[in-house]
Amino acid sequence: MTERPTGITTPIAEPITGCEELGDLSRPEQALAQFYRGLNGRDLALLAENWEPSDDAVMDNPLGGISRGWLAIRSVYEQLFASDSRLFVEFHDYTIHRSDSIFYAVGRERGRFERGSVGLDLAIRTTRIFRGVAGGWRQVHHHGSIADPALLGAYRQAVSPAAR
Figure 1 (cartoon, rainbow, N blue to C red):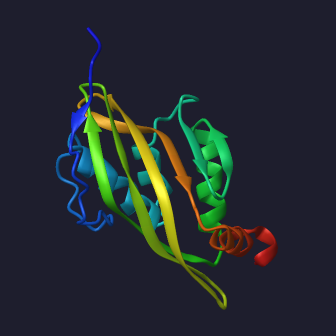
Figure 2: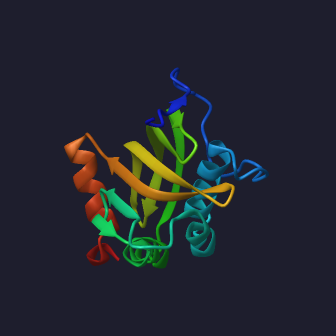
């Protein structure tokens, strides 16, 4: 019998920011909060706890294209965190779909990126997929896209090493 995900079909407006208490990491919302805490707090160790530490992990985002495996994904975060930029992102307008072995969250990220005199309000469509591991969750896939071509171009330019 095929395992069929079930979940929340009405979008949740209350954002996940990473400021939430991280109590029960067996709950999908807590795994998402752990990720956003790591991202917003520039905490590579926490991101490493959140991501699957193998070559199965894949990230496809506006900054790094497709990164395959935790080491390549980590490199994207290291470059971002090594810059003098400031970033805050929250996840909102999302649904969670869960089975016993995976959950995926589909929604939107909004936030702010600042570097020097550049400030951008971000709007990103986002999907994150987590695999069940030892009573908790590990992220195995992220896909993020910016629909506005002007914002995408400005974000890529602001983040690029040449902008430092």
